[in-house]
Length: 286
Image 1 (cartoon, rainbow, N blue to C red):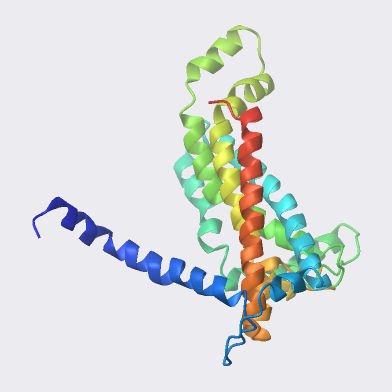
Image 2: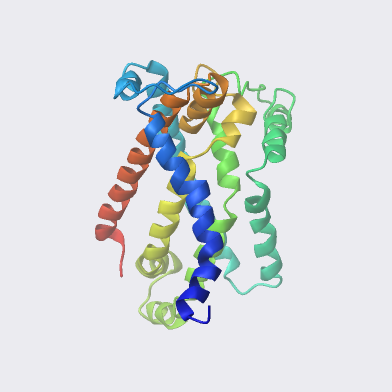
């Protein structure tokens, strides 16, 4: 018991047990179920690749993939750009900057909750604050959740609003850039915009890569917004992949098909992440 290895195993055991019981074993069970016709409450009969073949015959599956990619493609760049902009402002020498950082981080602490999603739903309802503001400037009310061309916008804006975690990481990276670089650039006649693109972005590129990967993975797994606000509508325009998996697993009890979809998404997310890392060789400055 006095052996150092034993002490290490004891202290790491909560994580090891949690990883095995909550992550690894359920993943292996899910992988097995993806090759069966298992429905909750029934027996699992092996059907081979039937569930995977069924995916390519499911029009709603492709619609969910399309909706998810549109959501990721819109929300991630906007969220990172806004987080970097706010981080840049909050690293300036102004009074009360620590308080502002804390306030701007609050949405990230509560942004994924059911309560906030309900509030967001009310904001964009026909009689909500957003339409009231539109009416005040002479514009007509919009049916945000009734028009498939508009339904994605509130969900993207809600995600962008939760920029606090990325902002904190960007702010930490900005503070690590030596001020002497900017002083030298100023002496050479560079303005602030040139300094930002020639000094700030290149030196911040490893942090941009980290935030990009983490936020992309998070966006692919988005569920709460669509589940609470739109239920996947209208016409499946916000039927995110995670929501579609949830509906098949716990609404239709088709756990085998849902498991197959989950593993396909794992492969897709892995490929997207690999693509980001491969492309980083051209724009990340080490």
